[in-house]
Image (cartoon, rainbow, N blue to C red; front, side):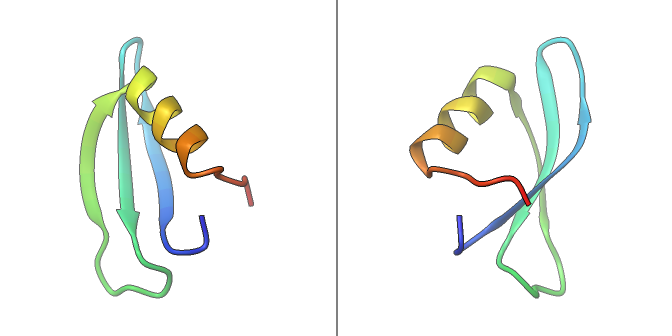
Length: 50
């Protein structure tokens, strides 16, 4: 995922709080989503842990 950074801030039983934005951005968009949706997103974008 060279075009975006995803920072997971907290994980619950069903939901994930995360921040998503471009590298070096001044502000990051904060969102909440289901764990399964985040897993699909990461797999679809062939995410790499850094």
